[in-house]
Length: 254
Image 1 (spheres, one colour):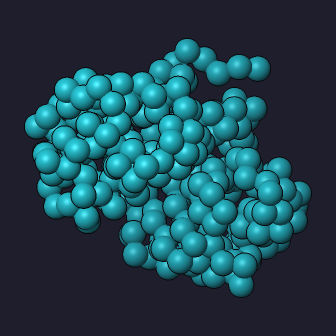
Image 2: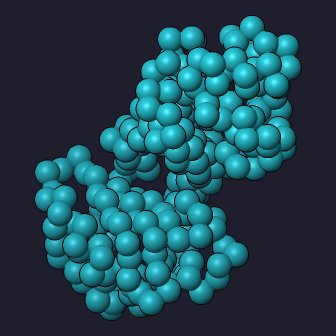
């Protein structure tokens, strides 16, 4: 089975929406709306800093329905330690592929858990699909009762996962740049330098190679090289050193 052209188009549109702006914070609304729409979710949860002790750090919740955000955050913190998917990823720290609850626990066993009882009674959800974002972070797309996770859903989750990781790293780097130089994203936009190019430029200024930048931002070396070519052209530079010096003069990098 393969994804449809429409699915790939959705991913491309999401990539543009997440990485084309200069705001240092991810557009969480656009991101979670796409995940809910593409994966038929009634609720999208983001869990940050999942601890082996069974707790969780920051939790966020988004839904097309008017659920109370604070109440949902508290609900996630209360249940995540016993969640089958959380236990699965904690037990196997090498497995970071997207997975559904039905992939890690029998349905009958899942429905006997405290987590299931609370989530079903409070927000009316049954199946969930996790998209890990690293060692201790994940999106949980929640499905209504009776809707199973399909092979297409798993393929889409695996396809969009690298994009989400790259977008989050891009956003984190842009926040670092903004903290170090106030107004850098806006100044970059005035010069025609995109937010994505600014994140690459900041790493170029630190002396990282194209391969190292690719690893840091979860993109290919070829993509990094293309961004560098665009940066040089926009800054009227012919090499790395000249580009960095002109970027410093323009207030784009320290």
